[in-house]
Image 1 (cartoon, rainbow, N blue to C red):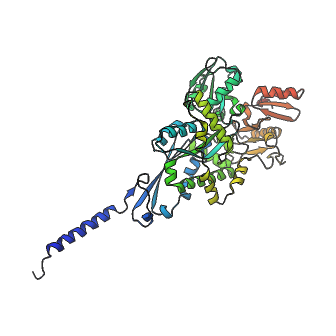
Image 2: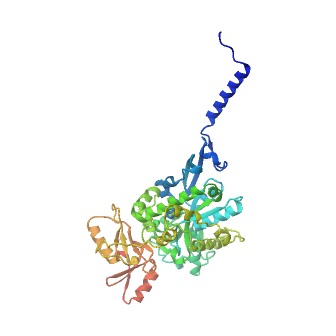
Image 3: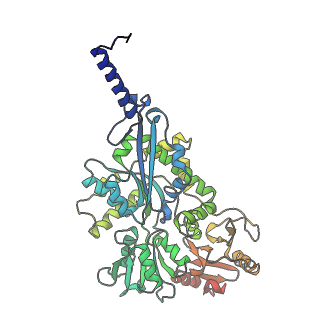
Length: 494
């Protein structure tokens, strides 16, 4: 050999450098958990990629969560707004969506740090925030936005089997009534019974049934009445086996569905929370501009018929779709605390003011600011979504939304609007003559309150050409008496 053998020192140095190169190549692209590994100033230039989990729990069948859940998910709106610069430049997002039939499973997963953002009704949301306060080990649950709400309780309802002789809450004395215990519908039912002088503890037999079980019980006449939340008060009647005898709006107690986020997630990733709320704002805008189109999409995504979706999200809908956290929502939380105490679901020491303090709309306001939206104007606009435009039959302008009627003809992409029930009835005759079907998708509005009703289940007062609709027979009779010789009739008699 002509070359010299390498020295021992040179040989060892070569081995060390080779080993280092192997370690470097094997560790490049390592995934870190942001919940355990905070980002550092150098993360933007590091070759390591962080994975941020965003776990969101929704209730697809509860139509109130549509703009915060399925629409964002299916339209990929969150991906559109997620931050990609600064500390998020070298981040891979792992978005995990889950859907549940009620709030309690979401609460459990949030507490176990399996869900970061959740959406639910006011009663489970109250329990959610209080549970974190008591067991969160310093982590709280923050109420960051509203999805939709009924300022007087619209959305909750009491139903009976379609052919039941029961017509009012007063008729429930001595009967068996089911309701999902601990829900907003439970609170509504208790208040409705007490308002009629019925003691829930002794005058009726209350049993707990989830929505799907309650629906089956109504369908098979195994229960005298069933109370539930959105959208079942409209969905079951639309499916033809139930009739609504009481709307939550009659109770005058506000109800809402909102969005909560774990405080540790929000603190670590405030820009992601803002991005989610930007997606929510866009979803709200899309629904307002295309209510029928998204009702059709929601039927596909949730299994809830488009007609029921439209009753909530469309113009003159049963609930307002608004993201703002308003005084009426804090009132709903306070009512929830009081009722849940009565039900022994919260301890006597729980104070409503301790929970309402956990409402924080700063993320929502930041989202609106970054989108160039005037927050106050957005809130005012969301409060007013009436039926407008021209009558489909006469072409006259629709000026009084609560007198308006609507028909969704099967196979048509748009709902037909009418200025009056009379015009709708005239058009309906022509539609049927043409061999077209509308099913149960004929809507009118309560003359006193403006609530959207399924025409087939409403009561009507007719005097000459004037026709008014009512949710309850009692209200129809009272109005008929005030009109002299007016008649109370069913929809089929119009």
